[in-house]
Structures are given as structure tokens and as C-alpha cells.
Length: 394
Image 1 (cartoon, rainbow, N blue to C red):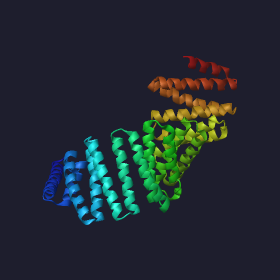
Image 2: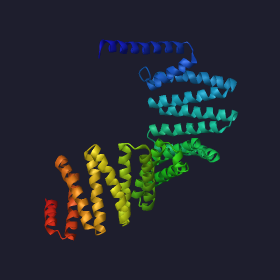
Image 3: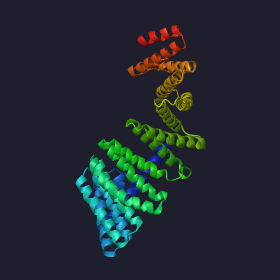
Image 4: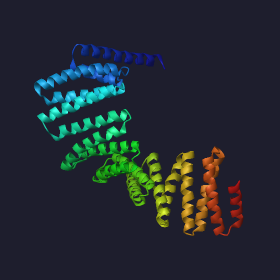
């Protein structure tokens, strides 16, 4: 770093320090705006060290200020300011692991919003109460008590869902989806797999009420990821057709994004995973033609990824696709085509075993030798079969 750069860094640091000193002096002088900014600085470590104790101190002062003003004037802005302060106070207390105090702050927040509803019972105010319930659940989540999250999340859903059904817009749908996602996570944490899948399916269904063309790229990426995740969960609970349906939706969304935007490596990797898993489900149903189509698409994507970055992970995934493609082609009695696929899988897995030498790669390589040996016998290439059998036994 040059002397000039050091001077500039020192000057910037000194300016930040001076700003913080002035802000603190203004807060201590009773400036409410400065008090709010100072509390945020302490809470989030912005311009100073993160200090939840000092954040709590200033947030309690702000709670007293806005609470007194709200009671005296009944102004909705004062009530909303107190609600925000109590939400931040709940967070500060959670950061200090003061969970009972956090629940008390959250309870007071609920009381404030209910008073706001008494003054003005609008959808917007009801929505705020829903998010207070969400925060109630988050306190339990932070304390690692997922069973206590669920009643609060259902209360939030009971507020969000009627409002969405009334308006049917993406804005209000987001709230319902938030509740669904948290419910899915809580049930997953509790090991309630079927219930977790049910909430995830509800989340997917409500988002699919919006036309994909109206979704942003990030919304479609998120929906595709959830479809893939739900498909995987369904496949583990023997809901094979549901798994196929969700994987196909994930593929459709990811292919559309890829066609429109060019797509990142991460997107192509995720798409190849959806195609490979979908092919596996069709293979188990003995729908060979469809299985082959999806394995070949996975291979196409993974070959392109390998050309960009020949990592061990990409090689392993590509070898899996070639291995299972060989199995599909062998089942169709297309033995010469299967031979080519098995050769590709063997080449990749031998290279991986040479460089890694781990048991999992050895097991994969052995599995491909075994399948390829059977395919060589079908082609009456008995010398090749004996050679592969020796490799398998070694």
C-alpha cells in the first residue's frame, strides 16, 4: 500500500469515527433519529463493533418514547415505529441468548399491532401482525425449538392466506409462501418428512399460479430449486410419479432460463442434475427412450462443464450419466451403443481412481466393469469380457 493510500484509509477511518462520535452525542442529547441510527449501528455492527447490550439500551429508550407517543396521540406512525423498535429489540435479546426477554418483547410487539388494528384494521396492519407471528417463530428457531415454531407459523398463515385470496397478487402471495417455507423447514427439522413435503408442495403450487413469463429470473431459479428438492424428497418416499412431475417442472424452468439468459455454470450444473435424476426415474419405470433422452441431455451439459473446468466432481457426475446410459442401452439390446457409453464411464472412473484412489471411486469403477463385462458377453466379445472381469476381480 502506498503512503497516499495509507493516508486516504486513515482519513476515511477518522471520518467514520468522527461521524459515530457526533451521532452518539446527538442520541444522548435526545435526538430520536440519532437514537434509531445508533441502535442500528450497535445491533448490526455498522461503523462500530456489534454490541447487542448497547443496542438493547437504546432500543428500550426508543420503545418508551414511541410507546408514550402512541398512547397519547393514537398516531399510526408512532405505533408502527414502536413495532419496528420492538422487533429489533427482540433480535438484540436473541443475540444475547436472552430468550425469555425476547419473547416478552415480541409479546409487547403483538400487543402494539393489535392496538394499531383497533385504530385502523387494514390488510397492511394485519400483514404486520402476521410478521410479528413469524418473528415469534424465529425466536423458537434460534433457540432450536422447532416444535414451538409451528403454532406461530400457522397463525401467520391464517392471516396471510385470506388476504392473498382476496387480492391474488404476487405481493401478497410472497407472504403466504414465506409461511409455507418456514413450516417446511420446521417439519424437516422435526423429521416429519411427509408434512414437510406437503408444505413444500403448497409453496410450489401457489408460486405456479403466477405465469412463469411474469416471474423474475431469481424467482424462476428459486422455484426450479424447490421443484428439484421436492422431487428428490418424493422419490425417497416412493411417490415416483410426483417426483417425475416435479423434476420435469424443474427441467422446464431451468431450460427456459438457459435459453433466455445463456445461463451460468451453476445453472447448467443444476439442470444436468435434474435431467440425470429424472432419467433415473424413467429407467426404473423401464421407459428406456425417455430415460435415454434425459441421460443424453445430462451428458451434453456435463461434457460442456468438463470442458470449462475439469474438476473431480464434474468427472464423477459425468461418469454416472455414462454408466446409467450404458445400462439403458443394454436393456434395449443396443449393445454396441452401450459399449461406447461404458467405455466413456470406465475411462473417467479409471482416471478418477488413479488420481484419488478412494474406496467410493473403486466401488463405482467395479460397478462399471461388471456392467461392461455383461455387455461384452452380449456382443460375444469374450476376450474383452475376460479382461474386464480380471480388472473387476483385481
